[in-house]
Amino acid sequence: MTTVTITNDTWLEVSNILDGTFAPLTGFCSSADYKSTVNDMHLQNGAVWSIPITLDVPQEQKAEIEKADKLTLLDASGESVASVQVEEVYDVDLRETVQKVYGTDDTDHPGVARELSRSPLRVAGKPELLQKVPPMFPDDEFSPAETKKIFKEKGWTTVAGFQTRNPPHRAHEYLQRVAMEICDGIFLQPLIGWKKPDDIAPGAVMEAYRTLASEFYPESHALLGALRTPMRYAGPREAVFHAIIRRNHGCTHFIIGRDHAGVGNYYKTYEAQELACSLTNLGIEILALKEPYYCAKSGCIVTEKTSRHPKEESAGVSGTRMRELLSKGERPPENFMRPEISDVLINLAKKNELFVGEK
Image (cartoon, rainbow, N blue to C red; front, side, top):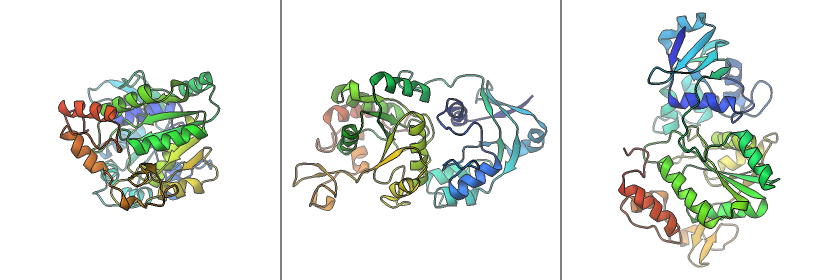
């Protein structure tokens, strides 16, 4: 038996392939699909796909793996958790990949650094799940089949998907409420996979969203879920990836706002919107919404389309400043974040559970 030890993230990707989260993928990408995805964001069959999903294996096992018909995938403890039929073994050019997928090969970019740390040796093939991935949030993790069933039970024919890696503030609420006016319901699905150390921890994000959904949104028009896949911080390409995932879950619309899935200054403000809207066969309608901000003159949340007062004229709170205040046990201004949300996050900060890198 040929075995390979995999990360928990790879185990998650096996599950995502098999339950339809990553449809139309049915296995880890072949070299042809890999090249096609990297070069022009389509699989060989013509379907839009923006980020290759691959199984990387150790270079020192190449000869052994090339002779194998099947690989048994082990978790960190040595337990058999999945397997994959070996259909192809191939090498990739990591520098070329990150340049095209992330738009940079700068290792200060967390997604680039993570991708460059992987082995360039990849295995293509259909996986099998031998053990289910233990859930982090059992009540909030839904497969595409489950969300489609829930949407149908709620009588929703139009559903807006909302992606986030952060807890909600007033600007997020603005986008969500706009989408709720347009569609029958909204599917709030924070990403709870791997994130960089200074990001808000998955548990904190989910607790904040539970508070928002249970105390402020009508149950008949909002559903909270969780997406278990790593953040790539790939900006425009990841926005397309996130849209496809929400389409697979049954969403008819997907919100893309300012600098979706971005990090630092690697991407233009609305570059993600522009890319997603340029794809005519994406299979989901993009809600390309402008960046909301609190306008002191208007006394409410606005965008550049709804206010004559530019953002620069209002006192804003940056994400960095928000995290700084919360970590000190101080509430951000109420016009930026609801006190009910702030208090949830402050309590977690006191227990050193606010950031990914803690504990």
